[in-house]
Length: 363
Image 1 (cartoon, rainbow, N blue to C red):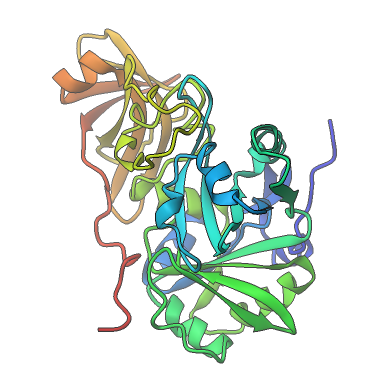
Image 2 (image 1 turned 180 degrees about the vertical axis):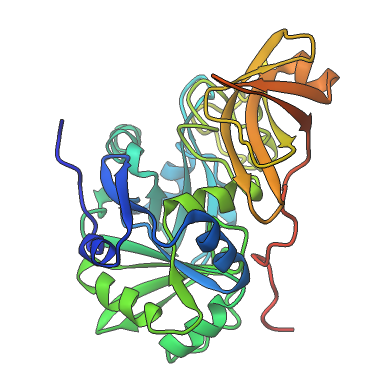
């Protein structure tokens, strides 16, 4: 078994008593004081997350926009400098190789942010489909990512940085100076709350983390709380809710495919035989990844991809791929685990509807 990778903040997490566990080849903090407490703090105040395991690629060269448009589903014609966008990397059959955010730094210059488990495969796939005059660089090792999330995150931001960022809109970003090195501040996140994601040279990661931790509103949160927060607002996780066996439409995200470019997998985005549906489950007992979904008469129709008790909605929820005819023709299901059978009702996303992600900070 290969040794787990560590982020520039791993020693800090261990000193703080974090529970550590493997994730996508990395040793990552799962929780500090507890998942529910960290979840609630993020919904009410501000939390910071070590997301340094994510991958970052730089792409530059004359005609980079046109070249990249043939590989990803993002509408790059509308992605002007200072804006970022979410989309997919598809294979020829329309299956999802990864979901990623692309940042337009300048004309024909981009930063791609990919999932940790997909760094090597994504890089090879993209590089394979680029013309020679466009350069792709893996910047993951020298780039760190820290997320600040929660309704009080702007108050924290204002204390840590001199420049005003109140006018920074959702899915926009700006580069500022921090400790003499560039730092990208992006108004994005994975919790459904007002928040910011920071990209900076790895040698400055600990200094930023400690500057954020010095603010009274801030507490650290692990990947456990990040998972329950994202699930409550219906955000998918690659490798569980998104994969090569399903298209964006099957995952309920076909509406995002707005690019007019002839990208890889275009026209292959069919719903297929399964649809990803949200399920509401009463009580605290939760469904687990790979639990079987059946109709009320016991007929197997699907499988759970994500499931958890979610503190902000007060009960458990799940996402599951269910046969199309069953997903469209039924409201009631059963989720069968190793020892339990849970009643589940088809729901609507997001489960939690009070998130502050799009909060207006200026009139």
